[in-house]
Image 1 (cartoon, chains in turn red, cyan, blue):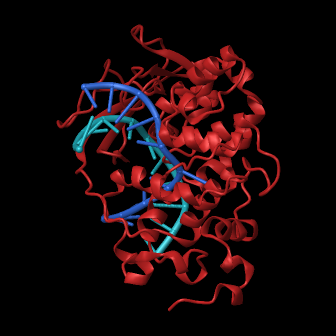
Image 2 (cartoon, protein in one colour):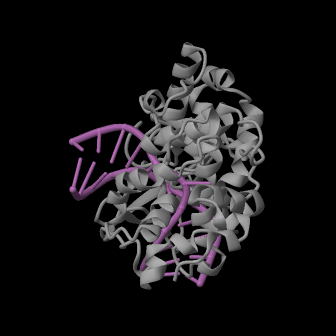
Length: 354
DNA sequence: AATCCGGGGTG
DNA sequence: CACCCAGGATT
């Protein structure tokens, strides 16, 4: 049923892009890496850093980590000078550790160039910057009229335009259909508004269509298909794996080793131990008065279910030399992946028991 | 086009 | 538990 545009409030009468901005100016989230809506563009370094942190990582998680990172490395030149191992340690717990490695590589390239490139195409050639991040930085930091399509934007587009495609194929269509709605003077706020809309209104489950500035434009809502879109993607099954980790304590220190640069937890420090495979592990690096945890640490990765048994020993004499081990003070361990934080807690409890 | 990469929040 | 998340690199 068509409505007389002149009778509607201004926010409803405007075109979809303006209507979304009007909503964003009122309802947008205030986040540490953001500049106030409608104001001057934020620092490209902060935009880039936040976007990389937010890759497959929730806003709630990044909120607690962003400021500390910026305080330690205030600009891209400081980050370019940092030791990669220090950055990896600061990244510990955030996951997807290839991001930290790429982050340093990207900072060094940007510093060498004297600053960030301004277009999505050039940004996309830098390490760790893909189509999404390139468009996000270009729009938010440099005002380029491009649409970054993340999971939020893909979901919004799938519903507004009733696009019946699997999630991983939505990006191109979403970009094409949303581009005409980009307000030329505020592409960055439009991009962030889209993400906020997806995160707070057009949610995966139980969307708040009554509060949506695009309800009148939404084909899925009109067709009663909001709950069916976007089409869910099939999920691969998870492998099972078992392994053992060793807590080897001597002289107030514990042995850690650095994992291979690529692969699971690549480049991060961790407890030494067996390889992870299908068989039950039962090997120790040397004999001694080992204690065994009654229950393994169960840790779920994206495509791996790991049961990590833990054995711990406190030595009074140095153990056989192993070139892969480095000794760290127990009370000043480097940043460890969550798996090893949990394993270390189990081991220390074992040794603390009478 | 599929697979590999963490970890935490949420219903 | 199942599902999801401001994705990118590799194959």
